[in-house]
Length: 111
Image 1 (cartoon, rainbow, N blue to C red):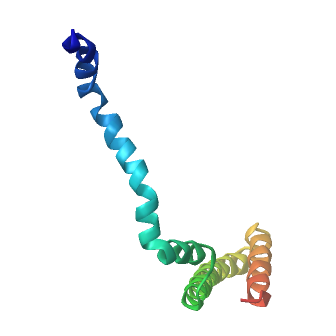
Image 2: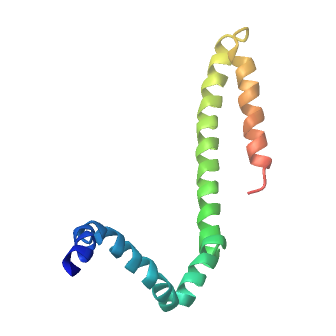
Image 3: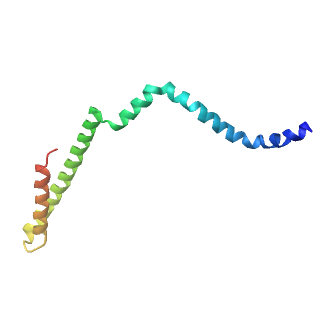
């Protein structure tokens, strides 16, 4: 009689193995967080702040991208200038004006 009472529990115990593991993880989580305590808060602060080296890297990247764009525009301007000199009635003269305006704009932008 006593055996019949525990039979359903004995049959369902193997099925609860994954659930019990998850419960154990949830129960130990506050202890794991408490161990890292300051590190957890520090990493959260690090995630929202920008260090000086990160600002320097970003500025350097911005300068390189600007210089690359200016180099490309300069080459395009030289090509359009040659085309405009050969055939002044061509669209290249209008394109030359647009490229030169973009170069002037980039040169006058603060970095």
